[in-house]
Structure formats: C-alpha cells, structure tokens
Amino acid sequence: MKKIILTLAVASFIWSCKPGATSSKKDEVNVAIDLVNVKDDKVMVSIDAPTFTSESTTFFIPKTVPGTYSEDDYGRFIEDFKALDASGNGLRVTKLDKNSYKIEEAKKLAKVTYLVNDSFDTEGGGGFGQSEDVFSPAGTNIKAGENFMLNTHGFVGYFEGKTETPYTLTITHPENLLGVSAMVDLDASKSKDVFQSSKYATLVEMPLMYSKPDITTFMVDDMEIIISVYSPTGKYTAKDITPNMEAMMTAQKKFLGKFNATKKYAILLYLSTMENDAKGFGALEHPTSTTVVMPERMELEQLREQLKDIVSHEFFHIVTPLTVHSNEIQYFDFNDPQMSEHLWMYEGVTEYFANLFQVNQGLIDETEFYERMSDKIQQSKRMNDKMSFTKMSKNVLNEPYKDQYINVYQKGALIAMCVDILIRENSNGQKGILNLMQDLSNEFGTKKAFKDEELFGTITKFTYPAVGDFLNKYVAGETPIPYDEYFAKMGVTPAEIEVEGNPFLKGGQIPYITIDQSTKEIMIIPSVELNAFMTNLGLKGGDKILAVNGTNYNLDNIYDLVIGSMGWKDGEPITLKIKRDGAEQEIKGTIVMPKEKRQGYQATDDSKKTVREAWLKG
Image 1 (cartoon, rainbow, N blue to C red):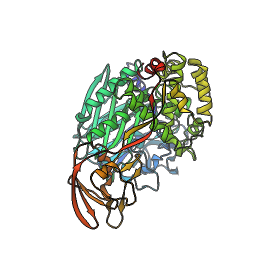
Image 2 (image 1 turned 90 degrees about the vertical axis):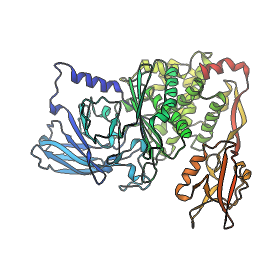
Image 3 (image 1 turned 60 degrees about the horizontal axis):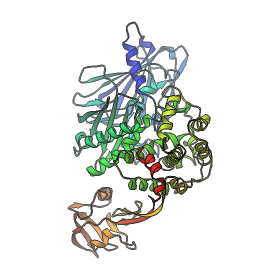
Image 4 (image 1 turned 45 degrees about the vertical axis):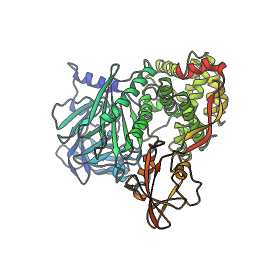
C-alpha cells in the first residue's frame, strides 16, 4: 500500500553529521509534539517555520497518504490552528478547506501551533462530520499516559513549497512510555526523543508507537527486526508472537533473495478493545515498518495466523511500490494526489507473494495454496469482473471505482499469478514473476520511477509477448480472466473440494444466527438449515445461545463469539447454555466443525509436474 525508503532517512542523518555540513535553523522545519500535557484527549503540535519570501503561504495537513487509496482528510482532526510571529503575535489565517490554512504576512511567520484529536475514538461514529472512518492502521490514537499511535501524517503538516526541506521532530513523552520506530533517536534522555528526516515525505513514512515497554528484537540475516506490542489488558505480549514472526520473516528473506531495502524493520502492533477504539483491522506498510491493528479478543493461534498473512503482505511491499513504482508515487501530492494505473502490481503482486512464499517455503501445502487462490477467484467474481483494472486503479478515489478497490487483494493477486504462470510456461520453469520484479528493480529502483503508460512494454521486454498480450487484454481491457486455462498450464484442474467452515457463518458470510432485538439475545435463525456443529449438539432453530463455556454472550459481544469460534477444533469439549421455548437448559458435548464443499483446484496432470514444482517451489 505505500512508498518511500529508509535510505533517505539514513542519508539525511549522515549528511547532517558531516563536518562542514551546516544547516541554518530557517532552512529546516522543526516540529515539537507534546505527549505529556494532554488535555481533553488532544495533543499540542508546534512547528517552527522555515524562511518565506512570499507575502503569504499555505499550511497543509494531508488529505490522502500513500498506501491508503482514499481521501481521509486528516485536517478534520485539527483544531485551534494559529500562526505566530517571533513575538508571539497572531498572523491572519484563513481556513481554505478541511486540510489547508492560508497564512498572511508569511515573511513574519515564526511558528504555527494546533491541537490534534485522534481518529481511533471516532471510528464507527463518523466523528467530526465525516461518515467514513480512517482505516485504523493509518489512523492515530491518543490515550494519555498509556498509548500514542503516531502515524506522523496525522500530526505533522507541511508548508507550501517546503516539502523538500529537512525536518527535525522532537517528541516529549512520559518517562514510563517507550517510543518505538525504525528511526534513530538522537536524544539520550528518557523523556525526549529527537529524529531527523531529509524531507516531509520521508518523515510521514516513519510511524511511532509510545506505550509501556513490550518489545522483542531479532536478526534476519543482517536486518534487525523490532516488535512492539500494546495490549490494553495485558492479554498478549511481544514474546507471544515473536517466534512465529521470526520464522515467517526468515522465510520471506530466503524467498526474496537479494531484495533488501532496510537494515532495521519495526512492527508496531496495536490490539484494540473495540470499545470506543479502533475497529478497522489490518496493516499499513512503510519502507522500514508496518503499523498493525487487530482485536485483542482474538485467540492467540488466530492472531498468529492473521499476522502471518498481514505482516508478510506489508513486508513484501519493499519490492513494490517501495522499490518499483511510477512517477505518481515517486512525486506523491498529499493534497492533490494523482493515482497510478498499476495497483494490480503494487497490491496484487504483493498479495500474491504473501501467499506464494508460504507454499514455496513450506509454511502451507500445495492444497492450501490452491484453496486460497480459489477463494480469491470466488471473491473477485462478486466484484465488477469486467471493469478495466488499470482504469479502476487510476480513478480509485472516485465512484464507481473506489468501491472496487478491495479487488486489488483478490483479482490483483490472481493477475500476478497468471503472469507468473505465463513466465514459467514460456521459460520452461526457469523464471517466474520474482525474476521479473528483480529485473524491474534493476531497471528502475527506489530513486527512478517508471511512466505508467510504458510499464506494460517494459514488462514485455523483460518477459515474453504472451505476458504483454495478457496485460493488455485482461488488465487494461475489460475481458474476465479464464483462470482454468492458466491453471491448466501448470497441470491443475477444477475440482470439488471440502473445506472447514464456521459454526455460525456459512461460507464465511451467511449467518446461522441473528439477534432478538427485544432482548439482545443471540438466536439461531428459525428457518436456517442447521450445520454439523449444531445438529451434533442437538440445537434447533429458534434456540437462544446465552453462554458458551461459561462466558455469557449477547449483542454486545457477539463478535467475540464468532471470532473465537474460528479457533475451535474437532473433538474439543463444549458447554452451551441455551434458552428454548422460554426455558433455560445446559448442553454438553464435543465440537464438530462443519465441512463445506466448494469449487476449487487440484493437481492432476503429472506431465506438467516439473514446471508446476518450479512455479510453487522454484
């Protein structure tokens, strides 16, 4: 989802420390964030301005940030904006829109100050007059004395024409809270952190999380990984997830080979209570870190599995768009963004790698890989399968295209799979899409962007005419992809498969349960065809589920029940308290997880075994 590079921050640090390299205070932007004196759940930000020669200037808070593909208007969380001269006198300010302020007498401008509200508190309620929430991993949290999630684009703005100016960020914080990021703290004190950045775009790619210290570190080759966890009730610690993260990231590095964009990578995991708290789960990538938000209620095994898929996706963004990207990303405009045509690559290739590496490195088997791809096919067909993917990508901020964005994780990954298959077929299994991305990285790289309209031609040059034909017909064009034809090239054919279902959701989407609105009790839908879990326990339509294994459930925590059931196993004991025809009773038994049949794929043609193994294991 996102861009920019740690090497820029490192270069900035080295440059600032070189003998003879001096920087006037007015040639940089100095930002101060006060996490100690929090009032009414708001944080004060003060920014010393650089020198202006114009009569006026405009100060911006981002409307959109790289990797989110939505207009989030972070300026709506800003209030009490002031522009001051060197004597502390106010300058005239005109608010132009949600995200920008025009400042008169810019030559006198010494600093701006403002208060920041956090976005987590507004989720689900459409706070600040906005009906759409900020995606939580791109959002902000202010919980005085306990936790601060600082996605810096939500706290720090920029002056017109000064985005290339170096930034110094100073954060004062309670001594008991540790700030974790991929940046280097230049201040040794326990209550103040100082960071330097070469320019605004680099600074806002450096999120921080302040909380009571709960960190682990490990090395993957020559790359340091740091994991910081905030768990409000203390249910989980960084140590609970570290072994799985270490195994996963070691496998990723082995899969990627020479791709290596950073020497330090930070994983900032915020676990939400979901009560006046973050509700958008997932992650947002940055060149040297990822911010992750997940529900604390999730069982540990589920959390580990989700993190494996989510964090691996974000880490693979070091390939694209962090290394391989277009001009629209290289020169991103935070308040008037021009979107690239190639989300199929930025998100699709990344999501495909997040699945392919797992079968490649033995974390999942071939059958599960096919199941995952089959699921993506079914989900993608619920979207507009005839919409040009490049057109959708270019216009993703607008209707009707933005409603199709989620398809980048489904059809986008399938596009990458088909390109991979075509390269394997035409190279006799010797090359795949990872080789293509390495070639593109050598051709372009972090500092050289490609032109949107030239990418397909460049890819064809590095691969085969069949790949170019595919991209033009199925990605730029409006023709649905015939996936069976591409699977067949690898000796894989359609088959009916059996997969494990959920006790309360058919096909992962259609509910077996509902809510009695008069009592808030959870009720099995009277007319539903019961699944194996329910018939095994003798449940009936209309039964109300009051408690499971001693925990009471109703509308307020139904999410806990459904999410928790995803970790249940066949044969485990279970006790339910139900209400049937107005009378309560207890049911004891064992769990039988329902099985569901669906269309999938399996390997059937052994004549294609060699190229198939090169595809999945090469």
